[in-house]
Length: 558
Image (cartoon, rainbow, N blue to C red; front, side, top):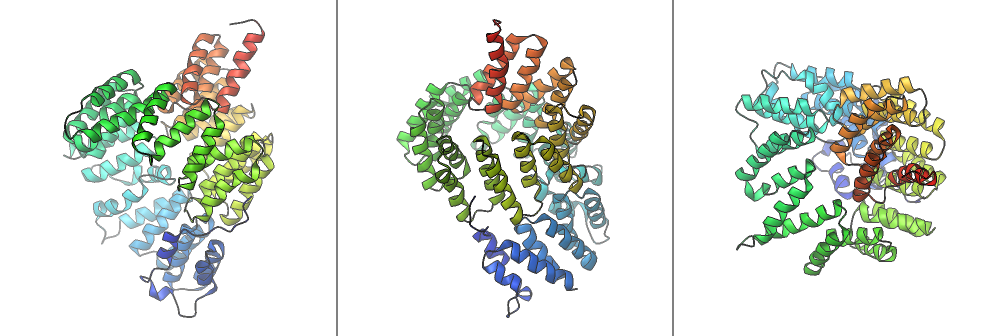
């Protein structure tokens, strides 16, 4: 585990010390300010919160709230938001911030009240207020909560086309594709919904629902209307529809059309062909194309990364590790570092492996939680459960009760054979965030996977799916719990839909396993083969194939 303290990222640090808030920076500097200057987020949050709770000046507690959110200390942010509401609950800007924190902490009743109060204020123009409020919650961790709040708060008859289009984006990102499409239709009925990003949104939603006709029509519309920025909309839609051979043919046609001034489009088509070849399992073609790209541009980090991935898959791990090291030295982000660390952990070189995470943390990035989660996963995959837990516990000391860290802690406990402890963490997390579909799904899936409390597991998962009806992970869990309860036929279409929404290896493993259990082993093998082409290194997938197909071979069955 790294011994360094968490540092606020420099851009954020400068923002928090901005001279735009001179009244909050008294000359004598408080302990909280000194902690912030030293990069001590926890000390800064504690100090600012103590000052804010004792002071009746709303600016002081607002400062505490800003620092708590920047440092991702959600309990402190919630406490500060409650105090700000008490002191300045009539202030529109304060209400906006309080509502956002309520979404982030999954206090939906608070969020509904705050936003409702804000929108009914006599001096607030509702549509203009929504135009300010909605964009900041269209994507991110708070988006599913935002959808559950705003889907009922917005009067669609009175809302403008622009507001409806933004709400559609929230619905899509919260995995409610039918609502997304309905909102776009409502926006179009009011003369809007024809912006390029909204057309792309509709194409993606229709593709995810398997509606080829609408998906391709919308993709063609945006490609013809703005070929400069959306030249590949149709091809991206074909890929989403799993029409990979057709996508490849159209990319080859673009690549062969070498007209004057078309070099950038041709190069982009070649890049997409390389990525498509890799996803289709044609490693030789992918290697050839990425190699050609790297020879033309030695600084192409993407080409070097995928060549390293191919080398790793082919067993040339020393070559892969060298490339990952090169990318990390050049300032690359997490993906090559994770892969390098996993290769080093395979060699029992723990110290060298963890340096890849320590270095990126010291660079002052804002995604410290994601980095620590990646470290814990690498350690867990290497069988170092205790160290993975120690990593998460140290991170939780810096980011108290953060749901992503607690979630990962439960996952590690379960994977390490300590399922009861993992379930307890999920139960505690659900008590902190009642009704959070992500946690309901995780708890339900864990119970189902371990064949525990199956009726309750199904109930939890159904509640999660009701919130996010097009979440591949939630639908997969629904199929899996039905399978565990003995209803294989009901499980199959759900698992197929989850697979088509995501093409994720573990979902492919589940889908194939249910087919295997029905006796259709040919279908199971076909699904596993496709999933292995996409993610040959997936441990859950390989474990399923070896466990079931291996048993079949031992028993003399083919």
